[in-house]
Image 1: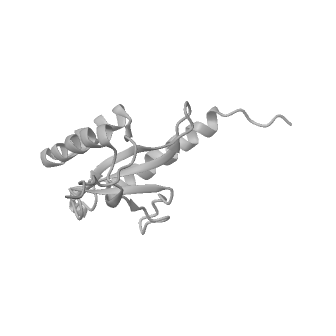
Image 2: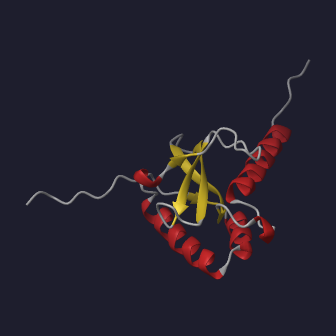
Length: 140
């Protein structure tokens, strides 16, 4: 009998505890259940490569997530999702995935709930603005 091969996975995913707590506070009970299960799995084993999808460079609502990946939860067409950013670890220089948002993919408009893509866009560009503000400027 041939050996059973596990599906290919990414390295463990990194989570920002403050952002995650904010996302869980806004989630439904079912959303929190999905979120907690996926965080445990992704932190221990990474994300399954087959579930990673490319985000649109520019979404119809103006979100700009071309450098990100997304995972539908539950897989393949779940109501929730996570958006992951690819970045280089500062200590060992290896690439890693960082979860920047969890939330509903397409909530009803009447709910006034932000889509996971809108949350990710706000966080991504807020962090880029902060990083630019911290970097030394060219002396002229």
